[in-house]
Length: 585
Ligand code: OXD
Ligand code: MN
Image 1 (cartoon, rainbow, N blue to C red):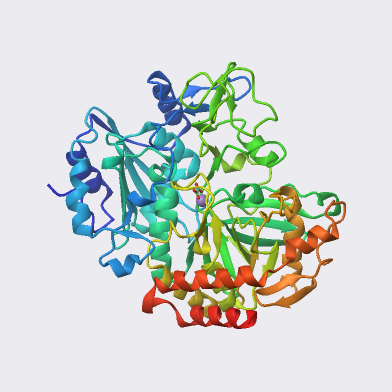
Image 2 (spheres, protein in one colour):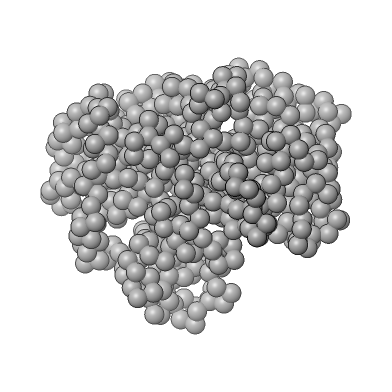
């Protein structure tokens, strides 16, 4: 039998009925998103051990979940774009024909919810009342997913109210299945705005509003409708006198995105303050003023725990003190969550993420362990974070981990050149992806795993946005991770990154000193405000240095990368590659 099929997404009741007939749950529960419902769900998950209570006097309403050990990360090789043709998905996505997906994955849903409860979770991506917001419905058999969806999205009543108004929703069907990686599939059907996910309970594979809808499906919708769905944080930078500007930034996971979004400015006493609008996803539309206006479609943070502490991200630490679900962290003897880097020394006794006594070898917390926490609890949230029209973006920042190549910061010469810079960004891999750690992976716009259609067409769409927006953001590239010859980081990072943000903002205002180089505008050695910071002129020089030989190597790698896209590669992007190469001759 073929799996559930949805063509028109205006009949919720019918879709739910059809799905229940196929998945055969014990009962069906429609979620309203209320406090009482959440309390009831949590109680049930505490009874069956899905959630473990943490020490409630210190961590009120905080719980720990331990996933199946084989289910701890995004699984790109099992993630498919099921567009009508392979060309529509492009060479950087895994493609499965829609019919094949129906035949291969559909049957896995048959009886998958036997003896389980099927939850119907209506949710809204975007602020209530925003014309940019979208209604989705996730059907899932995981109460853990429901509890997390309530944190990450606006769930229940508010979504149904929106649905009543415009009648359209994007359906997503999720089942834990048997958690066997052999029967794990995350399928996206862009033509139907439909998602099927089976065999995983891990965040991005199971909380369907995030990567599956707000990026893979939404990037398709945005392509058709003329806007952008991006893997970007959004931050507000306030200057002395109160002027507020907004910056959106894209980095591959585990490059400090959440830390940057919640940065505590060491220059606050001078009036330079940073506030958070979003930490992971931005939806951007061209406003009447020709600028790009961004909303954060999410309502919570799904952050990586290891490395988070009072120094690296005090705002995140304050946010997660209550109403937070931790996944795959360790637990101290007295019931507190723990992960590598939380405190200078590990506690004397704890159990690791698999509930085994931690002996000191290996990791106590899984390296990709996470917290889901409500955004409104974050002390640095901007007053505009739920503004229905969004916030106007002055600059885009792209970046990755590069221990040698790229300078601390540089500015592209034009929108077109900026699209090239973003399209060719690369980063050394980390734990959030599966596979080898520490190799350079090209990750255009940090969208490699998230762009739901042909990446070359996506670049073309970016070029088109730049032509249509009369006042688009300036485009920059940063690298907080450059190392010296002994392997030490050259730049202190974290809060000090505000100094780079200030240079960026000054550049958008036509100020701040910069030097013309083959790759773009690079700050002159004393252009950054280093007041009170112990970074020597020699270090600054190293941070801004360009090595011609390294860049030639990089550009030949880029050429190879571009060849994958064959004749779909936009000419303008290829011309930019040639122009940069020419400047290095
Ligand atoms: C994330 C990711 O979880 O990008 O945000 O992996
Ligand atoms: Mn992300």
